[in-house]
Length: 182
Image (cartoon, rainbow, N blue to C red):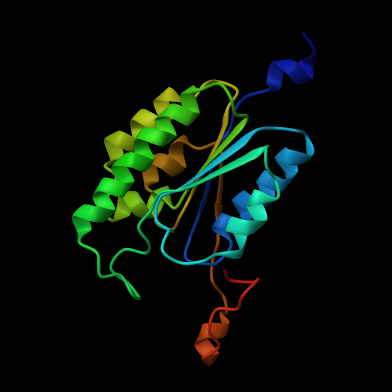
């Protein structure tokens, strides 16, 4: 076994913070992984009711990338009129799917998009997130995105990047831009 092989380890990576770019960073990893012919599974916990450019873009990466949009949309903001129970049920299904995909042995990279938000909103309990982390095979790379990462997740992760907003076009009244923001 070479020194490089001894150092291989499936990383727990967290992208968090109040700035933009958490999902985009995870999607950048997806592109890199596909370049090595890896299999990638993305599960979105919150997004779901809007049309995003990445939905069609990811389809072009098939068969290497599988995207599962499981959320019922942004909870309690913008145009959300759904009862919290509906969001909780969607999160429960996303958790079940995440556990299945993490333990399947089919993927080198699994991305749990907006899982941090699902935890902070109480849609996913911390012990349920812990179960996902405990189920991770040693060589699987697991990425968790979303603002509000808990201290225990940050402490446990191998890599944590915090996106910090310095300036945003919305502050000047500029709305989200197609191809840039969605």
